[in-house]
Image (cartoon, rainbow, N blue to C red):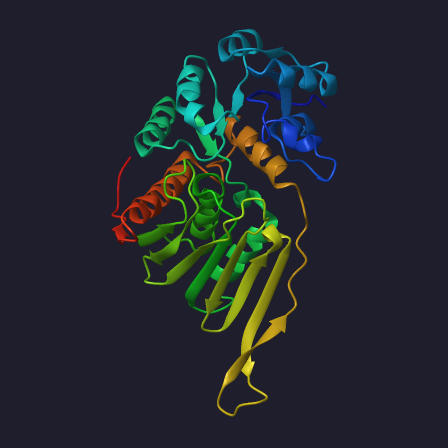
Length: 338
């Protein structure tokens, strides 16, 4: 039996998500693009690019057989990858993607957010769509089976009509808040139409923003920011007419409750704990790069988190920041194109 050729993959940027996270001895599983590509049968890690020569030297110690280059052009000319991960700082995503479009790439897997600026992010989406290039954004909860289980419960009516939602994150609305906003959109399958934000330190490049979002079915979602960025808090809480489901411990714990006849008050119902189905714990980043590789290689799409999903999350975050800059003035999110 002849096996299909592997798709040639490359990683640009050897920072935390590109490479360094997997050097943390406390982490288990796969946390970087490099290890994800190197560890699945669909892809062959053809090369990497990084400006910091200390990181390059460290990379070569762990992956001695993989070429490492000091710039994007040399990587693309010599390795000719078919899919490329952009793991550089956010401000560089747009120019790096534009340079990649000079080459015959089939897929681009960009770290979140796509950009700090909506016009750049929209241009990135448009340019890839015009060329038939798969553009995926690494909002990894889209590939997390725990979050997908909660999506199934919520959209399948498992807690009845959702009436209120609560979200908590540590801080950094661009870096972490976009994950939370995208997870919200995925789980409820709806869009916010109005937001209000308050920032603890609005002059920061990546501010800590709290606030609320009103969804298009008028459900209200609160957004709470812990304000200590090293605190690993990432939670979502959905309360419906028939029950409640919560995501705790960054997705490691799922709690589900149903309203049943109260044993203490006649004519009332109270929440009772339900057994949660066991969800297999596959590495979400591995599932993400596999998804990108399959779709870019001609498989059925779209990818689970498209460029347009990333653009939508950025629009919401930008509206929250704009509201915070105006002391919480509600901002409407009107339907848009492009």
